[in-house]
Amino acid sequence: MASIGQLAAGVAHEINNPTGFIMSNLGSLQNYAAKLSDFIKIQDEAVEDISRSSKEDLHTILDRVKERRRALKVDYVIADLGNLVKESIDGAERIKNIVQALKCFSRANDTEFKISNINAGIESTLNIVWNELKYKATVKKEYGDIPLTKCNLSQLNQVFMNLLVNASHAIEKAGVIAIRTWSDDAHIHISISDTGCGIPQENINKIFDPFFTTKEIGKGTGLGMSIAYEIVKNHKGELHVQSELGKGTVFTLQIPIMRS
Image (tube, rainbow, N blue to C red; front, side, top):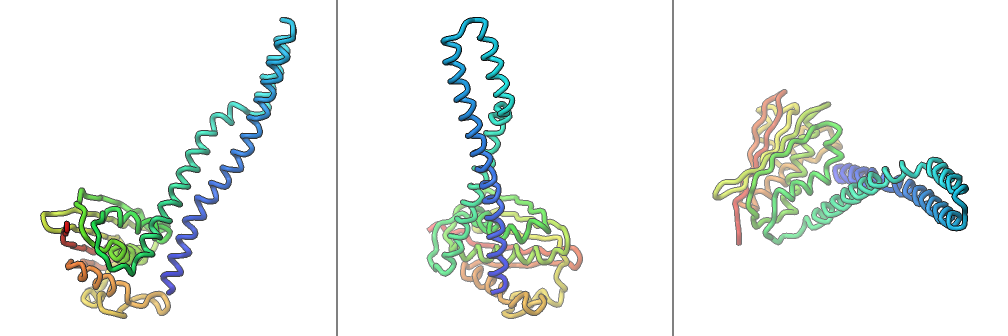
């Protein structure tokens, strides 16, 4: 429950950030729209004045328009409009991706196997756990050209989530989390590695046992890796771990390719 609360707070933070700058950009756009409306009105008035003015008055009218253009910072407004719109679209896209990832996780109890894209599942999971990772790790991604396979992607996403969050927790201050996918004729392989503290050899054979945890009381139930292991086994796959104290850990998943 503590992990769910922590992830929920992280997702809220990730949504709040783009929402904040979208709101700020909309405030600027409102101000820009008012300035451009004023300038268009000034130009309309100038056109009317020119139509009934003599040649001698023409320069005075044009100078007045140029002065108002400078005062309203019209050139700056026009130049900045594109940036504001692009930033806002990027922010909205970020929110959309997070919401889509949440929808995928909300189907975690669905037992149906469907043809799915595992690379897309990992990206979806990264959107959910990004707030856990971004302050501690550089995430390096090397996605292979893997085939679609019949699987329960929302359950596999739970596996990816556990491995990524554990990788983040293993890194004390700053490190690297590397994600790599590749395939052979029969299997899809997913490797998630970190440059964290590593796992003592005496614990390697215990990490998939229910309720085994090295975390402080209240910070872990010891069920995450056990559930991940069962999900992989349910997919007729394998989950392996290699680790070295002080250097890091590598988890490798092997999922059979099923096309029907």
